Length: 183
Image (cartoon, rainbow, N blue to C red; front, top):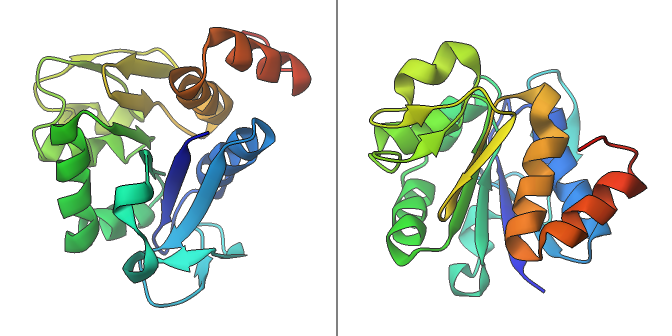
């Protein structure tokens, strides 16, 4: 199985972050919830505080297969302001490892030049930040090693896209059936 790190900055979108954790753990993947601060509890954009598995300084990035950037405000801006995380995003993209971002967070990939020539989606008001990409209105888009999602309402589709990338379409379809999600 793969190891996935989901990064939580203060003000993250709770449903986007936790849906990924839930779906992938149900599928048997190892998912680490990571605070980008030194705090082990991070509050989301709607005041829901969640306990983390680790902090950014504790992550062994060599053992991680996928980075996930949830959206939300100011969660997205907090992720983008975290230089140590942005360095890892750049390393992962350059190495062809999977990076997934949803809602406002695909803007980070656009700002860093990682979406040029790729198909991508984001929250509608953030589409202008998908610099150089072919903007899609699909709920979730996989283009090579980058997966993007539109927003909270697409959190399950986004999570299933990650699962399909890690395992296969059959596993994602089976999970969709198990959570009663039409695909």
